[in-house]
Image 1 (tube, helix red, strand yellow):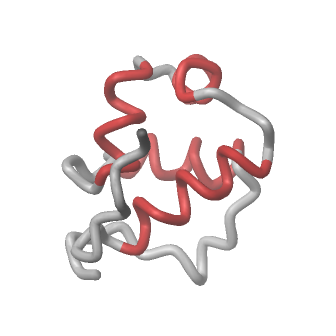
Image 2: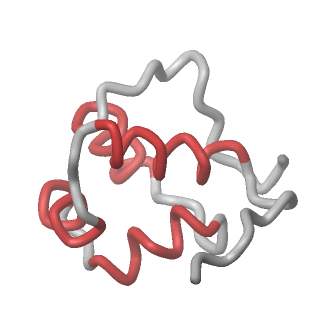
Length: 76
C-alpha cells in the first residue's frame, strides 16, 4: 500500500517526482542520467536532501524542468 503524500514535502521534491514519472523513468534510470544512485533520487523526491547546484542543472535538463519555476530549498 502506498504511503500518503507528505504535506510538508518541499515543492521541488514533488516536481522532481512528477517530472520523472511523466518521462517514464524509474528512480534508478533518473539516477543514472544525473550520475547519482536511486537512493539519492529517492531522498530528493522525499525532500530529505537538496541537490547540489551541479545536480540541479542535470535534473532541470534531464526532466525538462523550467528553472524559473523550480526552487531548490526546504520551503514548502
